[in-house]
Image (cartoon, rainbow, N blue to C red; front, side, top):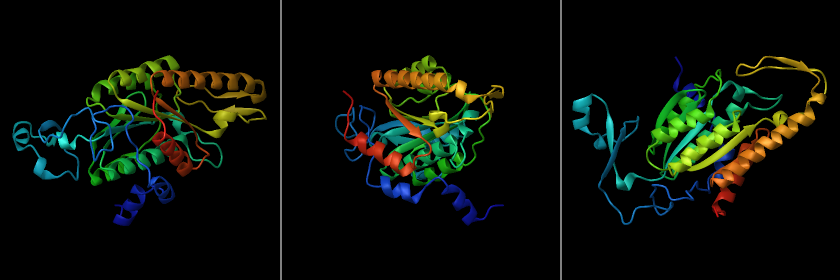
Length: 307
C-alpha cells in the first residue's frame, strides 16, 4: 500500500513548479459568452446577481456537505449537491485523448499522452485557483472516464489521480466522442481538447461544430512529436503500427515528400475549419518546454479576441 508521501509524489507528477510559476500571473478567461460569472472575470449572460437554485450536480469528494440535497438522497440513495446561480462560474471540461497513438515518443522526448497530462493538470490547477470549475474526460473510441466539473480544491486531487491511471491501448473515434459529449455537457462553458487528432478531418470538424452549436467555447491543442512533424528518418526503418495498423518496413526517404504534403494539408484544413468556427487551434510540438507553450498561448489569448 502506497504511503502518503508516495501518493503525494504521484499526484504532483504532472504539476511542474516551473510551469505553474510561469502561468501563475495569467488567467484562462472566456472570450465568448458562456454561462460564467465570478468576480467579473468572465462575460456573463446573466443580468444582475441571483442566489436562486440553479441545478443539481453529483457530489465530489471535498464538496461542502451543507449544500447536500437530503431529499434527493432519501429518494435515490445518491449524493447530489445543490448549485445556485452565484456558483455558476466558468465551467470547463478538459478532454484527453488516451488512444494508442498518443503513447508515441521519439528518443529523448515525453510521449504525447504525458504532455497532454501535463497540460491538463496545469490548466486544472489554474482554473481551480481562479475559482472556476473544471471537469475531466478521458476517451479513445469510448468515454473511459467522465469526472463532472467542480471548483473544489479537493477536486484537483481527483483529476490528478485519474490522469495517473491512464493506459493507452485502443483506437480513437474522436468525432463520435465529440458528438456524445456535446450532448452530455449541458451548461455552456469552455471545452479544452488535448489530442494528436489522428482521425478523419471531416468527422473531427463536424464534432467540433457540435460543441459550437451547443454554444461552448472550444480550444484544440494538437499534440505531435517532433519526428511526426519533420519526418527526419534516413535509413531503412521499421514503423510500428498503432491502433490496428500493421508494421511497415520501408525507405523513409521515398515517403518524406508525400508525408509532409499530407501533414501540411491536414493541418491547414484543421486550422481553417477551426478558424471558421471561432475555435482556437494550437499546434504543440512535444519537444518544446511546457511552460513556454502554455504561457505564450495564455498571454496571446488575453490580448486577442475573435473577429
